Every structure is written in C-alpha cells, then in structure tokens.
Image (cartoon, rainbow, N blue to C red; front, side):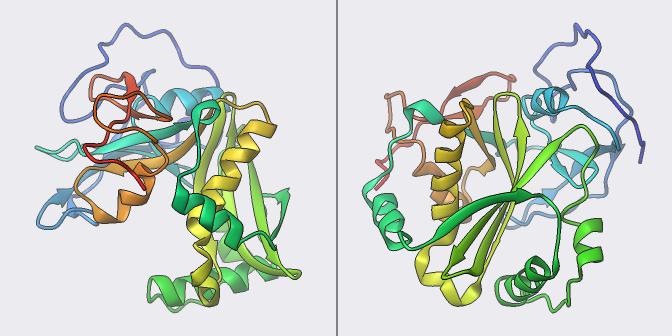
Amino acid sequence: MSDHPHNDPPHSDAPHSAFPAEPLPFPVPLTVLPAEPCPYLPDRPSQYRAFMSRQISGEVYEALLGANFRRSGLVFYQPMCTGCRQCRQFRVIVADHRPTKSQRRIWRCNADLKMELSAAEPNEEKAALYSRYLADRHETIIDATVETLREGLYSRPSGIESVDVLYRAGGRLVGVGVCDVLPNGLSTVYFYWEPSEARRGLGVFSALFEIELCRRMSLQYYFLGFWVGGCDKMEYKAKFAGATSGATGAAEILGTDGQWRYFVRESPST
C-alpha cells in the first residue's frame, strides 16, 4: 500500500461521478484490497481501495470525506463494491438537529454522567474498558494494552487533531468517544463503552453529546460514518435526520455524484 503524505490537495478537474467509486479530490496511488464478505448486507461481496498516509491535514481529510473515504489509523479507504453503492457518508447538520422523543429519554437516563475532553491517547483505564467492550460486543478476547491501543485505534496521521470524549458515572469510566476535529465538524472515529451499562443507550447518548460539543465549538457538521441502505444496524442513524419523505431535515447523505443532499426516510423517525 502506498504511503503518500498530503497536506494540500492539488487542483483536479476530474469529474465527481464514477462507478463503482468516486474519484479522489487529488491524485494519489491507490491499492485495491481483496474482496471479502460484506459485514453489513448478507450474500454480497465487500471491497475497498485505499492508501496510507503518515501526514495529512484536517482540510484534506474533510475533502476525502466528500469523496466517500473514511480512515482507520493511517489508512484511508473507500468502498468500491461492484454493483452496490449503499455505503454513503452521513453527516448531521448541527444547527438543525432536534432530538427525538426516544433521544430525549436517553439523554435524561444519562443525566448523572460527567463528560470531559482529553487527548486522544491511550492509558491503562481506556485499555481495560476497550478489552471488556470487545469481549462482550464482538466476542473478541484480547487483553488490550496501552501500546496495542496506540498502534491500533489511536494511530493517526500527523496533521489530524483528535480528541477523546470521556463519559464517567461516579468517576468510573463507562465510555470513550474518539473524534477527529476537522475545520467544519467532528468526525466520529470509534466509540467503546462499558458492557454492564448497556441500559443507558450510550452509543446514542455519545452521538447526542458530541453534536452538542460541535455546537459549543461552532462546528457545522457531525460526521457519523457510513449509512448503509438496507442494514438494520444503521437504523439508529436515521433518527438523527429528523425528516420524512419530501421534507428537509437535520442530516445529509453523500450522493453517488459526490453531492451532499438532505437525508430522507420513507417513514417517520421516533
């Protein structure tokens, strides 16, 4: 895989729409990764193309989000599944977001939590929580250490600012949201939480708080990762859109032509 640093994207006249993947906003060698079974939609193949960079600016990464890329550590990847374009970037328009009834209930359920920002760096407390989370949610038994966490989840290119949002109940760490701070928004990288606190709905609560954090930081968008049409695990994201068929709402989805449009559901969110 190419290790190709970029700080500022060169000018490109390439068209925005292509199949099965959008062109990059700047030229960079890409590696096509082997196809694997799709983790979201049954009986479909999943394939990505990617590049690695040890140095990249927040401005460039935001441009890559607009070309349907995400990052995992130093790797920036883009879906290129033949015959399928269901994985699309999803972002909440912070100024327009209004919590649903169920989201307000989750907010009240977590009124006892204390949130704080910290450097996006691992420590023993975070590693222990991450190990419990993987064992319970993904049936992966791993004794995460500070070093393995730094080399994995917390690896990032220089030039991208990241923060950890810590969620504590009575001083006990119950959740960690890793976020990239971009010029116009926060991009969620990963959220891991205490399995014994499942009743709290911490995944939804963390998104609600991080949207509020965007407001406090005067950021316009909250990038919530891919929306995958037809995948039940993604349905919670639709509830941040606040719109039904024919109405404008509080979230946008990246079109296959590279344009952001209001996200619309055929039935109301609750």
